[in-house]
Image 1 (cartoon, rainbow, N blue to C red):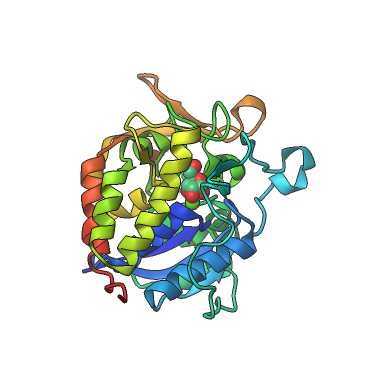
Image 2: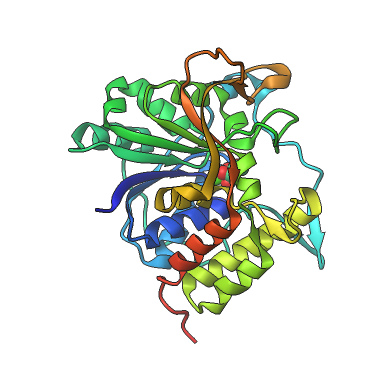
Length: 328
Ligand code: RIB
Ligand code: CA
């Protein structure tokens, strides 16, 4: 029986790979996609999500979500503006980890008429069985839905979150982007009472995708294999120039690892049940603060400290092979 999931995205390059993986997997029934502001503004993340659905010809509804974090937008000095070392220019062209718009045809399909938080509440209230939420962007939508109706937690089987970092960060010395963008939302979600599994940078950097993997994706001759290869090659270029990994010519494809975990949990390694809180201010804003003492605060989430890149690449290769052949 395929596992029912709702995928919450701030599409983005790795979000796009995650969406394709979820659509193509026979082990997953993708009930809906919810867009949220994060990598890009809500208009762009929604358009990009629609573009991926359209590219695969998938029958998956898209719900537009929150356009700002829960609290940060009230505090101008805390507006989420990501510090970066400036644009990467290769062969005269700027290369970003996330292009404003994905390089596939503009969407002609439309988003649904209600917002993502409203959808969560309506769908979960009516769900006959608990479903899994996979959140690979800021947690604003999920937190907003829980604020609208706390009882929906009983209809959530697990919340799988791409976010956080213990030994690895990417947005500040202490924070990973998704959590940093809306720390108040993250704190609310990881303490909501549902089973929470964090897939942090420690896991996503270990389970990286290489240029050789991209060659294998392209060799499939499928729509998803080609698009995933292009997205991962773009990410490898940026990683190599701004955040080199232990493995050369490789990139973290963070969000897709959350989908791969649902298909083969062994892609995550060293998963521990821990107590985690989120930092809100100053140097620890957006930090996933783990209690590593022997007598800890009550544990509230599972945290993957490592990942398996061979298993991850193999899961993705099998999935992209299921996509339609590219038209010659
Ligand atoms: O820090 C990585 C996360 O931030 C990924 O989900 C990426 O898509 C961005 O949203
Ligand atoms: Ca994302």
